[in-house]
Length: 431
Image (tube, rainbow, N blue to C red):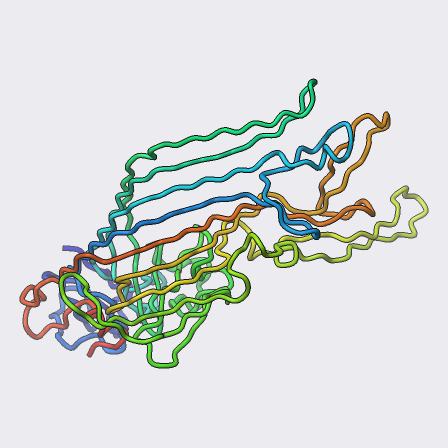
């Protein structure tokens, strides 16, 4: 029997406690030996799912990765630049193209195995978060194939040589198991790290889930693996509801409800349309304009004892939103039922920037070799901005196939408040 400890036995606040039969009750905070009070946990936002809910789903994912270079002159497909040659035309030549096509089928099985408050205070006098997490155990089994085409351009003593390699392979079967949390109030969120303890070095900050820094802690669909909170959808959306992703790139619209089969029965699911602004093909976009910010750097001195010259130059900076793999655009439709994604058809564009800055060419002193130079500083009057990047287009079709709920007779003894949010009833409060 696992229980959540009361770290402040002198306080009179109500503290959640897990007892047998997966029952969520409240005690008066007077110690674990006190009689259990079946009064509910007033003000607690319930976990979104009932304990024992089991979901079985399948997913087909087709992925295409292509490498590009973007300059003020436009976008070209290439994986890199030669960088040196007998003349500057050769130095600026493409090293070839690189394309990767993969097809993957996945089976996803997840189960609600527990629930817990979002965080647990260790400092005396701190209150618990008022939000409960459903703890999810997930197993994903993947099979796939990959086709890779790559061309090469090299310079050797006989001149410029070009050739191409093609590889087809079965990528094998992989099995991944993970735990994560799900919580709901106005929105449904996924907590991809179950490190729910307060930071003792930050005791002055409100540690509740509503106090996260939206600039760094929220993941949305565009973040990195180091962030832990992902915004999924709006809870119980209504007509005319719309909301945005955490980075503002995507808009979600509640379109309507739609009758569809889920786990052997017909249900009314919420149909959510995902839209994005601008051209939906990142290969035709201008990442030079979107991801590079240019500012003037100036250094002057009147120190008579220094040989340092005055320095005034433009400097390029990569926008923080373009670091790592970021979702540039996503379009499609999702269907949600009781805060569970039951169907999705989406096209997602993921961009990874491989190199960026200013580029120009220079001859050596003998005028026999021209070399491509790069820097984040515009150290040559002929230097122009560039971005080398790859775009991964992911077309996904997801479908829930089985939906199994724990029988109500197993929910616990009469008179106690049952744990879990009852799916569609999540977001309310107990008591």
